[in-house]
Each structure stands twice: as C-alpha cells, then as structure tokens.
Image (cartoon, rainbow, N blue to C red; front, side, top):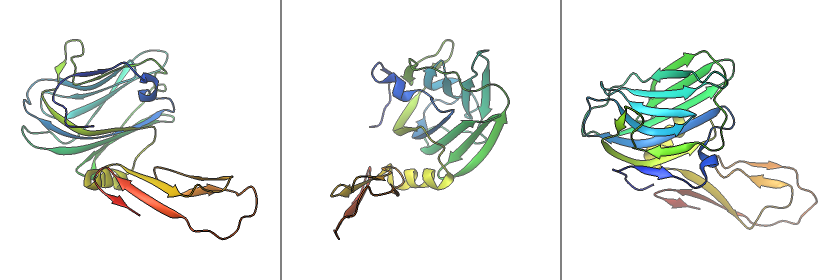
Length: 212
C-alpha cells in the first residue's frame, strides 16, 4: 500500500479482510499529525476497531461473538506528532484474548481480556482513516499496511519494518505432493512419485528488494 492520508472504504473482497480463525495481525507505518483527540485508524465493523486515543496510545478493540460486547486493549507507547512509527499488533483467542503490541520491531506490551470468541462475519465493512460514530478520522499518514490471518512474532514484525513484506517463490514448480509456503518459505509434503535429479531456484522477494 502506498502512503495514505485520506479515507479509503473497501467494497471488494471484504471477506478476505475478516477474522475467520480467531487470529489476526496488523503491520503498518504510522505518522500522526494531530494527537489530542480519539481517532479511527482501521474500522472493520463489526469485528475489530484500531484507534488512537487522545493521549496518543493505541487501542485494538475486538467484538465478542454472541453478546456483541467490545474488549479494549491499549498499547503502552503514546505516539507523538510528526514522528514515524512501525506498529505491529497480533491478536488471538483461545480461552481468552491475547493482544500483543510491537513498536519499531520490539515488544511494547501484552494485554489479555476474557470473553467469547471474535464475532464471526464475512461481510465486514472495512474503512481506513474514516470516522466511526463519534470518533473522528485519523489525522496523519499510513504506509505499508499488511493484514495477516496468523499470529506474527517480534522477529516477523522486525523484518516487516526493515525490508517490508517477504514472499517466496520457486522455479520450476515442485513435484506433485510438495508445496511451498509463500510466507515462511518452508517446503512440506510427500512426493507422489520418484523423480530424477533436478535444479530448483528459490526466490525471496520483499517489498523493496529481490533475492535468488
């Protein structure tokens, strides 16, 4: 995603942006320009809402299944005006919610809360930097926003901060029965039959660099 300083509302592929496995991670660069009021950064109604509070702290809110109650999880860091930060958030639910905040590639704080699982939805509305009820639009700039249906670690967020998103590719295609994980680069499976010796080239791509 290119640097964004105005509202965007997504109408296509909204199910791809929804939480379907009780886990999600967000990675983005953010630079606020008017800290002092509560502002909406990402609103994926009715599942989760990512906000900046009036004091510059961040709030990842998730909505519980069945009862519709909202759980608030606050960062420790308080953002300042006109400063770029790389922010990572991972949220998961098992018997309770666990939300981890990362700032510039290192852990900021872990928050936990009780409740039911994430609200299930395949038709969430997804707004970037748009107003949400009485909450005004985020005032600042966002860049390199990524959403993952996975729980990312501190090292994952550090990599995203340093080189952007990394994906893997391979040529020629693997034999039948084997598959390449495009995010972490591991090859898994069992070949369906024997095959002669061959040469394969693995490609590692980031949003800024290409390797082979």
